[in-house]
Every structure is written in structure tokens, then in C-alpha cells.
Length: 285
Image 1 (tube, helix red, strand yellow):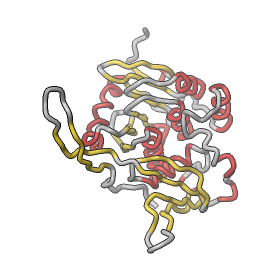
Image 2 (cartoon, helix red, strand yellow):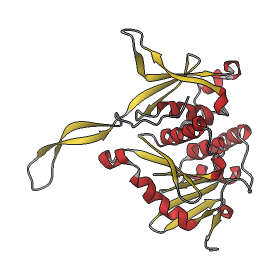
Image 3 (cartoon, helix red, strand yellow):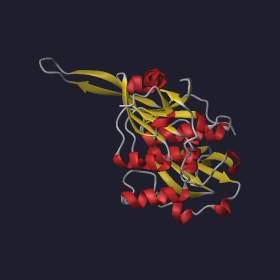
Image 4 (cartoon, helix red, strand yellow):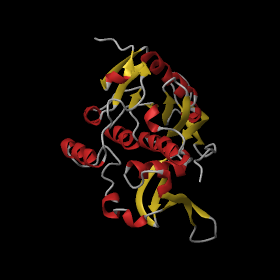
């Protein structure tokens, strides 16, 4: 099974809306909107998660989610990712995927279905959350991950923005990109959920199996919350950058996990919150 390489025709929809402006008559026009639909992820026929996502590359989303939740660790752990057959009328359910595993007996379904690490509002306090993540995911050593020139980092947001076709139509999607250390864009994905976009690129890595995660840079178009750093750590991605701000818990996890975390990557500047040793040309101040 290869990762998705199809376009996402259902990523945007058109609705007629009314535009109002002070001093002018109201006018109707057709507006492009980002599509949001639920995706149910099943493992061996058992439902483990429902996420609101933008349709497209759903197999990557499911694979990335299961990797970052610790259900799978390598491509060989997955036998198949398939839509579920419709109950009536034949065909398949468009918003349900079932993942079949090499070793289904090894899955802790009780832990998985609690969704502990799928959202910032997971309900655990910061220290407990950090301890739980650190207990199941090894940190990165200082020699793991690429060395990256800050000048290369500065050019990544423009490259990612140019790849955001649906955002340019709707203005309503987050984006995530994976880059090489020299700034080459390997894959980009868009989604209404920032964590879904991250899962999609991580799932692409997992299903493709030919890109070393420790050699890439993960860039997100918005802010970096705890779960994005957790997903990067689970995927062994050592450098994470964001166009907006990180949260305090994201910074704490990046520092304790040995990741490089860059925020406010825009307008010729950046803030380095963790792992500055992986960056070259960083001002000592």
C-alpha cells in the first residue's frame, strides 16, 4: 500500500453568501469554504477515534495518528487501511477507515480509546501529561536530527504558502510541510485541524518508508501546541518550526525531549525556544 498521491477534490465547497459593507448595498456572491467532515478511525473493526478533518489523504491521517499514539512503529505493522463497506446499497462509507494490523493482539484498546494525547484539552495537568509522554517515547539525542541554517528556515514559510492551494481559495485551512535541511519541500498537507495536517505528513512518511524522519524539518502554518511536539517526538522528527507561537507546554516538552523548536518564523526573524545547537548562524544573543 502506497500513501495517497491523489488531489483533494472535496477540500473546498462553494456556498452563496451575502456581503455587507458600510455605505454600500448588500450583494450576494459565491464563496469557497473549507470542507469539514468527520473521519472515524477503526482498528481491527473497533472504533478508536473520530476527528473532524478536511477529506483527502485519509489513509495518511489514520497511519500518522496510529504512529503518534504508539499503536504502530513501522510500515510493516500495518497490513491494510481500507474504507468500511456500506451497510446498505453497496459501496463504502466515505468517512470510515479500518486499519488492519500485523499484530492486533498487541493493541491496548482501553488506553487508545481514551484519546489521552489527541488534543490540548486532554484533561491532564501539564506535569502528568509530560511524564506520560516521556514514559512511552524516548527523547532525541543531541546528535540526532539535521543541522539547519537559519537562512534556510526563513525561506520555508513562503514555500509552504505557495503549496497551500485550498487555503488560497478558502483562507480556512492549516498546513504542515516536511522539508529537507536544504529547504526542499518533500510533502505538504492541508486540513481544518492543525494536528490532522501533522498526522497526514507523518503518515506519508510512515507509508512511504523511504524518508528518514530524523533528517527533515516539520513546519506548521499556525501555532505549536503540546500535541504537535508530541507527534513530532513520536515520529522522531528533531526540528519543528512554526509561523506563530508555541504554548508553554510545547516548549517544555521540546526541551525535555531534545527537539529543536522555532516559533514566530516570519518577517526575517525567529524565536528559538529549544535545541538551538541544531541551528547554524544563530545570533549568540
